[in-house]
Amino acid sequence: MNAAPMTLTIREAVPGDEALILQFIGELAAYEKLAHEVVASESDLSATLFADNPKVFALIAEADGAACGFALYFFNYSTFLGRHGLYLEDLYVTPEARGAGAGKALLARLAKIAQDHNCGRLEWSVLDWNAPAIAFYESLGAEAMSEWTVNRLTGSALDNLAAKDRAHGDAR
Image (tube, rainbow, N blue to C red; front, side, top):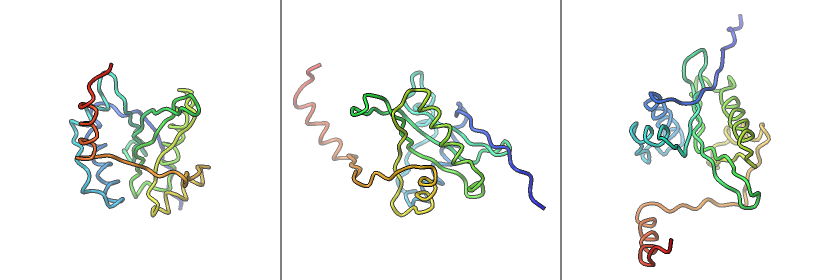
């Protein structure tokens, strides 16, 4: 006998979701073998997601009323398009809910948000070893941007470069 199909809903994150989002971040980081890099706290999430003028947003996927995933995103800008874009920072669905449509529903909602804001694109990064995620994204029509390489400044490298700006004064 087949189990009854679950009811899947996508909602905006609200104050009080911080512990849940942090749990999902931790689970995603563990899957990506990056748990040692998570330093975010519930108060960090509260201060950024639910500020008066937030610059980052989150969606929660629920299956039959139980949270089963999230997406965290923000708006960026394409000078080539002359339009904003939507950048998906994190997408995570619990192992027991995978294959039930939560990931696709989260991405569909993000696509709708991008369209509603006249964005020229929706983009994200995926670890090159994550074959299941890559296959899933390709099944939705996503194209890998293999000619681009991500660059990052953190810690002392970020501090050192910022210090060079202070050395030149504030021309604003």
